[in-house]
Image (cartoon, rainbow, N blue to C red):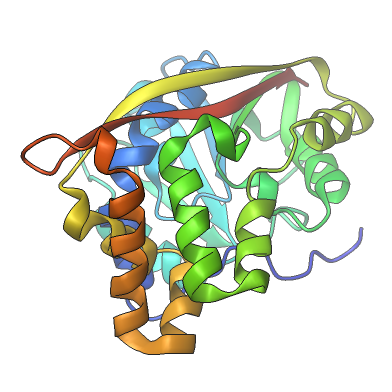
Length: 272
């Protein structure tokens, strides 16, 4: 099995805590959608793959109940520390483990379901990652992932791309664009890994964001591309990038500064 190189989504310092705070409003409806797609039942065993700070793991834990088991795997130790700190104790304990997607520390046929919320597009080798995912999923088990659809289908991300290009440079902009790659690469990898009934469809939600004058820069600060902007031009550059996002979305902004914007992901499902 080939070793997965470093994911294209890495956070350090205080960024993981900001990710937990500022990314949550955008992720919330898609987390519900990806967990809905795997038909969880009380007592199920679930893996949140590339779990980040544990958005999907927490929702899955509430669904499977006290008899269930939930695990989260991610290559970023800093993200998992935040996940550990934020998961509620009223549900089954969630076991978080530092592991890349192509080297999972679980036995064959362990999971009734595997979910991956906005992580699969960052797998350096989708074929290796999903072959490993197939190994740990029991026959008949469900898989679901979301990946962002094309930039033009999410106005906020289109504005963010413009800001990253202007304030972070072409390399940062190219890295950001890679997060919106076609789902075809993943569906092909799922079929190659032995998954059946592979489907892909777009899901769109209107999401209410906090006042953009502050939120845009704070959200960027929780992403690798925002870190690049700060490393290159300092905090002032990040503030300017946030202003760019805000200005580009002024026609969508309510009098109180908030904005309700459409976001579109591709929801990919399969059965082992």
